[in-house]
Length: 475
Image (tube, rainbow, N blue to C red):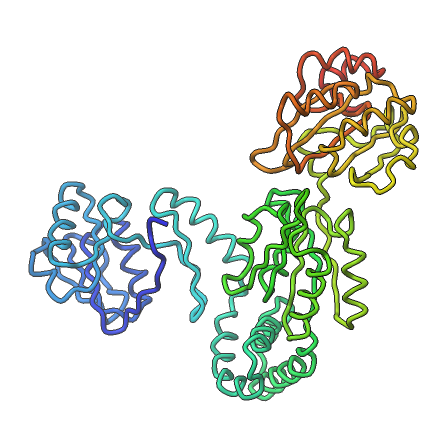
């Protein structure tokens, strides 16, 4: 960060404002909402009534003595040279200065503000994109109830009593999360004092009675792109005390977690099982029994090749409450970015997901899995691609069947390569494809958005219409 966001207490402070432009007047009205004394040096401003009695107006040009006793300053005279000169003088006097709309001359910038006093939300682009900051402010304005500030002020009077009712900090946090839930906040702000007190006391007792058991949430992190995380998954991360995550989880997704949350990397990559499945189960149970909210964060969807069944069974056996929050599985994410329809009314009436780590893999009916009207998606199959291709061909699957390999689907570093089934090992080696990657095997792989020109003959051999091979639309 080039700037540190802070909230500056304005009580007993003096703020200097220089200028009579529209920008200066906007700052005047903003400053008047604070508790600061305002020294306004203006010349020719059309405002006749001052917005607040704490505004001290001087109808003249700026003087060096105006910097005396000032804690903060805004300059918006409208003259670039004059603004720069005044800013330099103020800086020499030790006064932090903001030259409105000129971030290179400013020691600080004023963010776009959502005011729900005592709640304040500030959004800043460090002066680089103020229009975007204002758009974000508008979105937050519509999301935050207008009367949430009133609820916060009322709830603040209950803090001391809450510490006696709920000595555990985690329990208090769960209380506040429940109090400010969207479905209760609007109602509570307008209740009378007796009804409000009864509600918060009941909520505190409910948290105290049910908080000891903890909770484990198996959360799908999706295929990689943080924007594909579900709203419920975001909320779970924001409320978690402990997060146990795998290697495949994009680190950017962990940014949704609280800074105070304890993060545990479970490892689990090819050839390295990290703390192991039993160790993960023991961690989840131990933290939940301590009354903590635990998120077990898994790439894709936890119920698909995520060993969720084993973890749910262990948690049930231990008497721990468990919830599953689904995520977009990697196959769907990869299909979306590559624009490969996994099913197609002309070419694939079924799709099968299998893992390359299949035990006793020779028992699978590979021909049935990758038949002429089917799509086969193989998870964790890069290391075994040669064996999978050989088995499919040996079982009678056409060697010319189109394939696509998608590495790190939906990530910014995603790569896609294409070819024929009998070329699968070579294209993986030639492009140095590494896990995590998916194999898509079937006629629909020739419909990918990006593919070499050589794929046109593959599409023809697969029986696809010429328009489809050229990237035409699905009728």
